[in-house]
Length: 249
Ligand code: BGC
Image (tube, rainbow, N blue to C red; front, side, top):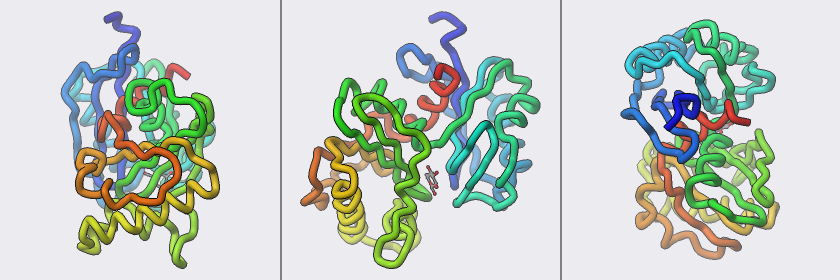
């Protein structure tokens, strides 16, 4: 593997900040996956310290790609629903470059990162039509592909459902926080997917996030969803692997 194909992928999440070195040619991690809990409050300065610590652990000085759980435009954070409000306006790309001393930095939405990884190396490989990658974690993230082309920055976790924002009703965190059975939670997820499929005519749903490792617990309850529904193949690693693909775009 040539060194220029290696990128440090960072996945900033609501509960954990994770990173690894990634071979961007074949979508595999070439280091261990390192993780720190997301600091509370999750301010930019505190999260940046965690990222610096992960960089130290990986002993990396090269290119960096980072997935962020919200909307980033031109390197700056526009919205960060599950982190501290002080992120709004933060120059994430500039700060990563300055604080990590990285030669090149590229950032994007965390679900788009997971989607890119699944599309290139996982369950979406070679799929045509409308493919929707849904990540289930603290919130709900979305990445839409039409014939292999990503429409970035969609926020389908924020659709209104039952008088609530959908992610406050069906994210994986709601199952644990509200102590819902898998069945109860999966029925919520099912309604959400049915709604989204109606709006977008999805051919293939790829369900990502930590729960994608346990499809047997909830896939049996996903009934009536038009289109195929598959579990993400890269599991939680998709966010890191996809983030490492951002500098290639
Ligand atoms: C954010 C999305 C993000 C998702 C998963 C949502 O609350 O609005 O941008 O992709 O959480 O982290």
